[in-house]
Length: 269
Image (tube, rainbow, N blue to C red; front, top):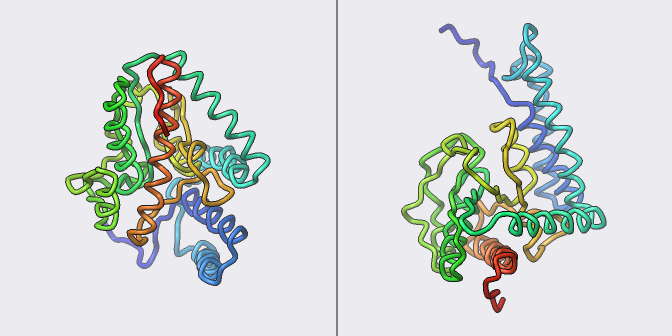
């Protein structure tokens, strides 16, 4: 093919997701680095105006995919903003935890749980392996699978993730990432994630999600006023350890909900 150079295809919804995240983070934590990062992101939009970048879901002959994407973005934007406003966040947390308790009361042992993050190399592999291990220790019958929402498969976990996970008895060395499309979502009973952005990306890949979705951040000790367990990718071992500690505590509370509903002894934690 005779490609037009240097014209690039871009995903507008992913750009808007990234811009929203940077904007909210910058407003809540006004550091020079984040302000500079936001300015760089905004500066990149001149390529749209100059027609150097094309929207990969938009075509004049069929605007439906683009319209569907924008509707989904608007639908999830309020939830993502609300997850960072304390009064709205508290109400959201109560509702999500109640929904989780209802799920375990209506679905007995043998449930199949999928743990999702974006790249499936940092948060979801650690959480999935730890959840599987802890469930076995507490004799809670659940099957755990994992995946990422970004189409990047067969990637190993970063060295810092591997090192931090070892302190919790989890070996990430042999792990390789999997995309959500490799899972049969119709066989999943519950999807667990860490960030409203992950849920939004999930809906872009799987248009009709047939099972409940739970944000594990609602059970985690919060480092900020947000229902988010931050992605530690690219950070130090100390940051990975802090993130994994949040996940560790949240999973204990998660399993306590299952144990109570299934009349199993609760964790001392």
